[in-house]
Image 1 (cartoon, rainbow, N blue to C red):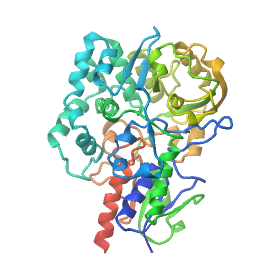
Image 2 (spheres, rainbow, N blue to C red):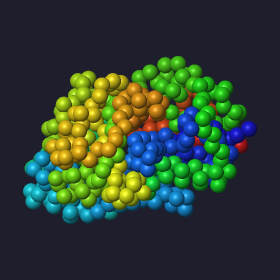
Image 3 (spheres, rainbow, N blue to C red):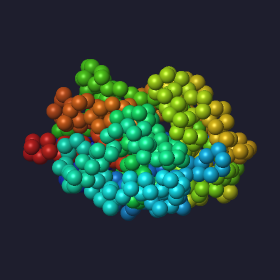
Image 4 (tube, helix red, strand yellow):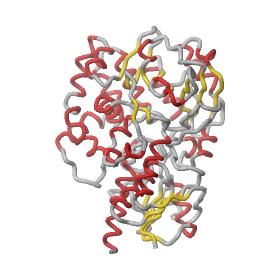
Length: 470
């Protein structure tokens, strides 16, 4: 009998399996698709030789993850690549605000009236970042805070809506970049704890950068898988689990799935009926005949580029997708151009380009033209560089990854109390009604992102139970 079966070979499922295997437990992973990775895949979606990331592409939380940093993933081929700038946010006048490793460079891009306000915002937390991120990403009670005073201070700043934090700034340059950071989790700017979301992304960039993985995001999952196999773990692909009886006997079952899928497989009925999913995304992967022709010089030097003319436009786009049930006329977009630092992703002289915008859950329209018109405002002539494109709306994303219910790549809305307490209001979010069944997906704290911390935290609950049984 196995000690644990893990269902789903995304970053969280693989991390949970690794953590258990490191402690001497026998583990097997079962993945429905033909390859491991989940939201961390790399595929030729457009033309031969163009390596695209269907979901995650840039990894500020990955390089800062306490779980990943404790594992020898570099030994198994994971290499983080850093551009000159972590992120750029261009404006229609040809200038840009930036998120750089340097706090001073970032603050200077906001203008003289807001430079001091930004430095004061990050100054209390950056020197204590490693402890703060461990405490923040271990919530709720999976570990006692190592620095409760700093965590409490962070809570005072982070728990209010980001619109409150934006009042610290006089000009819209800083407000716009910060609004874009919040929008990475598709949360309305006025939502609970959205200040914390934006601040975590900013601090992560200053601490260790905002890199891409050499060769694509698949290398993260491949490194976890290779390490797991060296620890004696087994990985089965093309193995769809429809009910618990499809799995071999084990003392624990750990699910890197949506709460909806877990309830169906384990027979939990309506146990997770109150869990809310967020808006979907419309994703376009491009094969380009050269770099994106950004007007702003800073955007040419960054791997990640946020697209939104100002904070008001970003707010309208988020409201349209999350509250008004319509696709935005001028969408907020997150784009990644890995070719800035990774020439292995496309043939010589060519580029891959990754872009998505928010749309309502389950939306079935085509946003390609709207997205490209928005891009042309900041990169005139962009369409002339397009060799091929691969589009995916909410139905296609959900078909590709069952965790993306309605096209929600965060596996659950990051709103209200669900920002922190997910998938249910519980001090033990990784346990379920069945004592041998656990959940470790992005539907559990600390939530979306390729960081493995949901799997790491869930593994703690699992090995406590396994040790009690022994």
